Length: 177
Image (tube, rainbow, N blue to C red):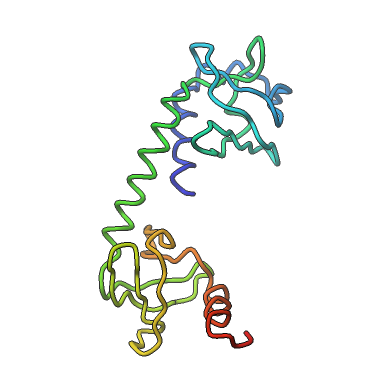
């Protein structure tokens, strides 16, 4: 989800002048509110507001944005980008994240589980199937889908914890875990 927060940062920079005039608390920012862009067209619907954070559903993406990122409009909350611009920013960030992940998914690459524990090394990548040698042991293999990985500054990370992987393996083999 890191890529989505970058969209929020870009929105904050592009909307700084308009947001400066907004009050600290914008009562228009509420679940169910329709958000409009600079041309007066709908951008999406706020689906939740909690602890100063919202989730804006554009119909294509659900994007976390700070509640202070919205301006006040005549008919409800506003933002400084159109739906197409916002979806385009998120699409670009998803594509960038997927390209980084795909470049990192190579045989021998170290993999960390979502809980920060070392998982193993990539043994093989074939299409969307990624085989990981747990603990570097070629006899203890687990197969995950390409979509179960992210690449970042810390390297290649599986989106699953070691416990989740162990539970799934136990369920498949029929053993208690």
